[in-house]
Length: 151
Image (cartoon, rainbow, N blue to C red):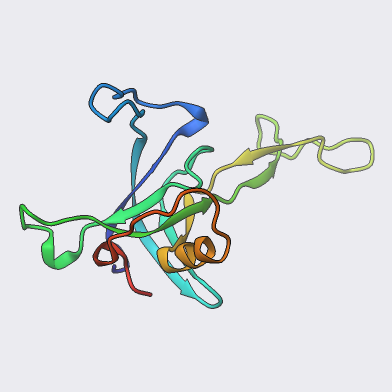
């Protein structure tokens, strides 16, 4: 996976689904969003920063990409790069129509409004599978190791 490369991430924003039970073995289909890899930071775990607008309901969803050397191949398969963990939210003071911050009698802003800065944060798939291995809950899943991205 490269900086500037397109990626897709899947989820159920605000609990919505796109239907599709009739073609997906009775399960709803997730929404699909796209973004661009902006940064990959590896310290304790790999964090992938995606330039995209995140919504509540995508956390836990996969981030997938098409390897560059396979992008024109009809038989190419997407690879899982990571799992969405959050999108940061900034809190901006409320302003009037002139752009001035509205303050109370003590000079403090009267309130804040959330702003989505257009960054989605994911952890690398290796970190996610390590967490699952150390905290197993539920059924054991069969994973195709060929579709994982090595960190």
